[in-house]
Amino acid sequence: MPIVIAALVLVGLLCLLDLVLTVGVIKRLREHTELLATRGGGRLSLGTGDEVGEFSGATVDGERVHDGMIHSETVVAFFSPTCGPCKEKLPKFAEYARSVPRGREQVLAAVIADSPEEAEAAAPMLTALRPVARVLTGPDADAVAGACKVQGFPVVLKVNRSTDGRLLVMADQVDVDRPAVAAR
Image (cartoon, rainbow, N blue to C red; front, side, top):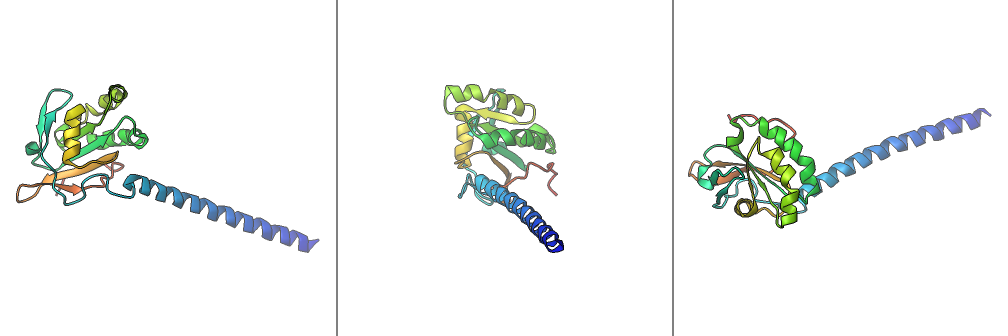
């Protein structure tokens, strides 16, 4: 009888070890899946050090914006109402944008809606973004997305002027889970 009990305890411990290892593997696979989803196997936009093209447009509030207006570190984000990850990232981005040192002046958000149905679905996104960012939609948002060569969503970039005056991407993987801090 003691041999049977010892065998059962050993099998139980092996099953417990297997369960712990399986949970660890599943967690790691989820992290990898998220990384692959955000990178899409390729670039979603310009990368760090790439030059941003020219753009101009008007925000949903009627304010004119163009590439020449950006003289300090600015966060530029791209969302789509048909993008599941965008809906998940939007609240985190809005919180991040609230922490940007000069507020709306340094945050530009483009909501890409290609049809009237998408434009209607974008309304909650616009409502969430307007207090924390200068928001563009329609052809104006498309112009900014074209200048940043956006090919997928969501994308959050930090852009700034280089010493020679070119508008460059300073970071192409902005962590919106942490508050923004002033550049040093």
